[in-house]
Image (cartoon, rainbow, N blue to C red; front, side, top):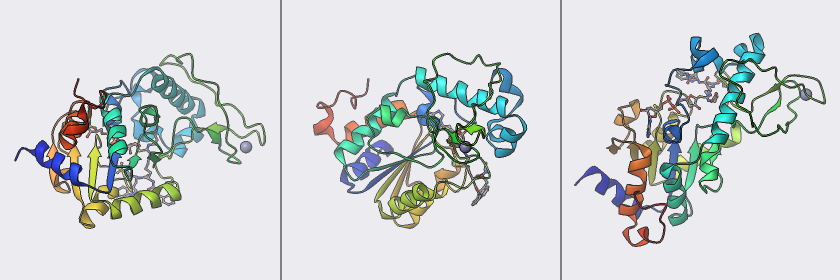
Length: 263
Ligand code: BV8
Ligand code: ZN
């Protein structure tokens, strides 16, 4: 049985679904993945070294400039058919839990109810001193890919405002990690989409599901360490495969939702 037909059967029969996503699901929207080399001022750096408390301490304007550039980029792009298919799965299996490593808001803008952000968000800055949440004006102008931007100061303690993301070496938000582990250990199908599965503890989530007896389905154009965890590996892009999977899993509902129909 073709892999996608087997995957669609598993998904169509599922009562509890988890969709676990990484940078790959936003690639077709024009958001660079972590694997993609950085450009401009940051081309000398790799994302992993910039996304650290040390980098922010040493060069706050360089790191803040990078996150403002990313915030602007995300605000100028739109969700793609992959994001919309995830929202379509939620509408057909209301118990679906979406867990993402992404700090963009494309799942929400595609209609996903309440995705669990394991690594925070570009849209939740806070004070690095007292933790006070900070409201930022929309990132209208693109800080050209060569500009350092001084982080704003906290009105309460004058500490530096930092992005509301989880940096390497920092703990994940406990509630999010617990919710993700709980959903993974209780699901019967986990879809892992567009992640290289290299960053922990997030990469543990599909393994928790597999150990609990769930069927893991991977969508990725390339092989990853998840290949051995997945029951079905679907090689290809999220924007192409996920809409097809939804149509095959719920053929009767396909017509009702143009967003799910393969373009
Ligand atoms: C911590 C937010 C401790 C910031 C991010 C165990 C073993 C080894 C190492 C560790 C370990 N435990 C902890 C570590 C250290 C570290 C880690 O995992 N290092 C790795 C690199 C070896 N983990 C940490 O530091 C974590 N914290 O451990 O704290 C602690 C505990 C208690 C108290 C104090 C401290 C924190 C990790 C989180 C870091 N923050 N993001 C920001 O975004 O700027 S991680 C960031 O990178 C993303 O969020 C994501 O998680 C990761 C990138 O991975 P992917 O999303 O998978 O993207 P990638 O580019 O890699 O791959 C894209 C994939 O998509 C590819 O496979 C490609 O083929 C595919 N693709 C491309 N196009 C498409 C596609 N797929 C489908 N369709 C397409 N069109
Ligand atoms: Zn403060």
